[in-house]
Length: 178
Image 1 (cartoon, rainbow, N blue to C red):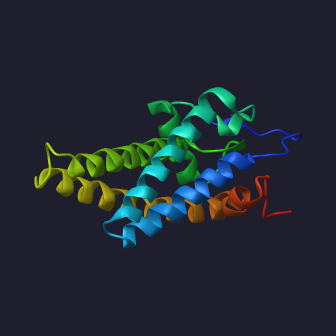
Image 2 (image 1 turned 30 degrees about the vertical axis):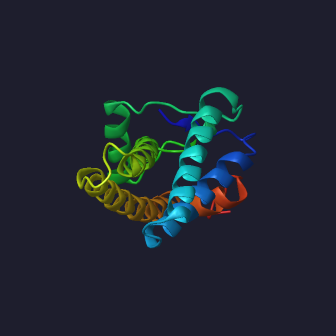
Image 3 (image 1 turned 45 degrees about the vertical axis):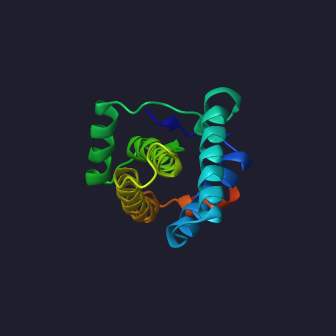
């Protein structure tokens, strides 16, 4: 279920959502190229803190509907895929069902990365390969999902004639047909 778009809608993404989005994106990118050490761990745990803050904000604090969460149903995902095929979209703001699902998977991967990174540094698992191997797998899956996210944002912006990137920068709805 996507959030219906209204004429009075003045904001798609709040400042808090935009700041956490871009900080997580930046820190994930930095950590992908910063393999180990203090800064890698610091940035990783800071990302985890941002994810938890964003989840708390979406569950309890946000008054903006598009910044809140919903669980996409199989039917809503199927309908969204049909909309992509027909290129006829029901008006909405915020994440479409596939985008919302991707958000949850990205956050889960960040949580799993923090957990496996932490486990690899504990006395119990020090020197064990499996936490490091899992950490690497989760990192690669996250990078693949981020690339898919970028392609999907560009594709959906084009199909819907809406700049989703500008929405995530300004917070305001942006229609490219205006």
